[in-house]
Every structure is written in structure tokens, then in C-alpha cells.
Length: 220
Ligand code: HEC
Image (cartoon, rainbow, N blue to C red):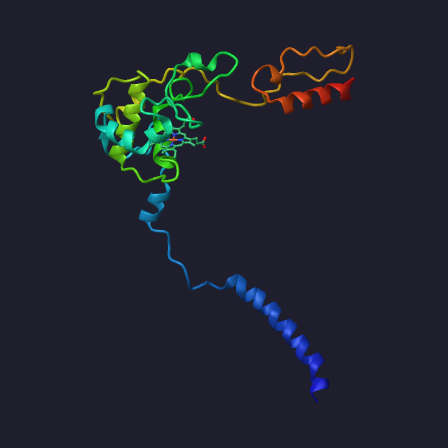
């Protein structure tokens, strides 16, 4: 009896599982909770270059110095000079010139607002998002004053921070379309490629140099 019934039960099962799929598509799962405004606000922390999203609060270099010294200086140095291999935070746009350019707050960052965002989001390294808004304003002000971008007593808040003009503010171009300018050549094309600069002349490692040699040999 069992033997005879088996093929039947199998087809019933198949039918059931087909219904199951349909039912699953329609089923509303009774778990989870809607995302509250508060939870959403906790995730939505990005600050635009124009300062959109900056919270209430304020701080100056004077008020932020203590927090900087205790929370940041053991990696970035008391004067933002960078200890060991930790990045320096102080410099000027001239630091981008030469054989080993360095990106730091004074040389590279185009907006003070995104500096605030970065500190608020990612620092102190290993204990990110543990600073209050006032502390982030104060620490940002402290770093900007170390860079001689603002005065020690300048108070930064949601209104004044976007007004700070960073030294390398105009050093960026809007990227649009392809950055490859070359035109496809179909006839009378150049016979020999002239190499005008080499990665190995700037920062490339010796292994990169070897790789370049290999590529050179390959093309010969
Ligand atoms: C434990 C070491 C450590 C501490 C403490 C620390 N940082 Fe950093 N910081 C880093 C490292 C590592 C990076 C590079 C991170 C990367 O490139 O992803 C960095 C990067 C930065 C940068 C970006 C530098 C640049 O121009 O690219 C800023 C700004 C900065 N930290 C600010 C702070 C501030 C402000 C504090 C204190 C609230 C702080 N850091 C505390 C290790 C640290």
C-alpha cells in the first residue's frame, strides 16, 4: 500500500512546494520593525562640502586643544606633524610639489566641512564616532589653526565652518567624461612611442621598476 501511494505522495509534495513558492512571494513576514527616524538619523551622518548636515554645536582651537592632545596627538603629534607612520595633518599646498608629495590638511583638503565629516566619522582611529559634536568642532578648529588657516579664537559652527576657505580649494578640477584624451589613429600613426615620464622616477618601488623593464622588453 505504501509502495503504491509513494508516487502519488511525491506529486502531491511537488504541487505543495510549488504553492509554497507562490505563498512565500506573497507572505508578509511577521518580524523586524520599521526603521525609526532616530535610527535613520544615526546612520545619516554625512556632511556635504557646503556644510549640509552639520549638527548644532561649536568649538574653537582653544576649546578643542585638550581633546586633540588627549585623543589625537599620540598618533598625529602635538603639532600635527605625524608620529611614526601616522599621517601628518599640517602643511601647505607646496607639499604637493616635488618628488615625494604629501597630502595633508593644509596641502590637499579642499573643504573644511569634509574634514569635519572625516574626523566625526572615522577618528580617533580604533574608536571612531566617540566624539561629541562640540569636540569635533573644537578639534577641527585646532587642526585648522595649526595650519594657520584660522585664528585660535575663531569659533566654528554649522554657519562659520562652510565659510572657511582651504588653501587648495581651487586645486581641483571637475572630472567629466573620459580623462583619456587620445584619438584613435587609423593611418599615418606615430611609429615610435615616446615616454615622457616614468612612475619609477617619482614614488614607484623597485619591484614596479622591474615590472616596467619587463613590459619594456615585452614591447621591444
Ligand atoms: C591610533 C592612531 C590614531 C589616532 C589616535 C587618530 N588617528 Fe587620525 N589617522 C590615523 C590613521 C592610521 C590615518 C589614515 C587612515 C587612512 O588612510 O585610512 C588617519 C588619518 C587622519 C586624517 C586624514 C589625514 C589625511 O590628510 O589624509 C585626519 C584629518 C585625522 N586622522 C584626524 C584625526 C583626529 C582629529 C584624531 C583625534 C580625534 C585622530 N585622527 C586620531 C591614526 C590615528
